[in-house]
Picture (cartoon, helix red, strand yellow):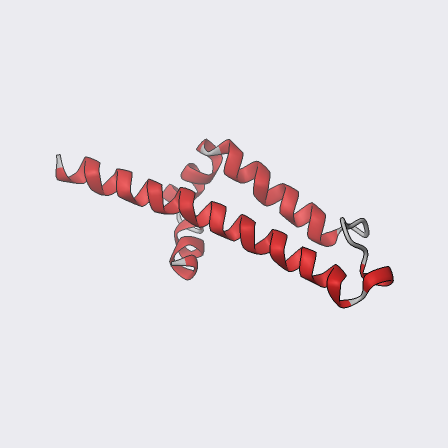
Length: 83
């Protein structure tokens, strides 16, 4: 589903969906900034492996959140198509 979601976002309709869904766009931007920033909830330099686990957990939660939004969007499209 994640592979299909990223392929969908690369289409014109997918980009329109991404722009219209501002919350999802903001979370994606926040995730990118968090992953790239040197500041962490649990720093890797101090706690080594545990520091990477918080990055992975935050990434996983965000992917689940975005997948849920995308799944609801697909359900809405399918319901509108069947009317």
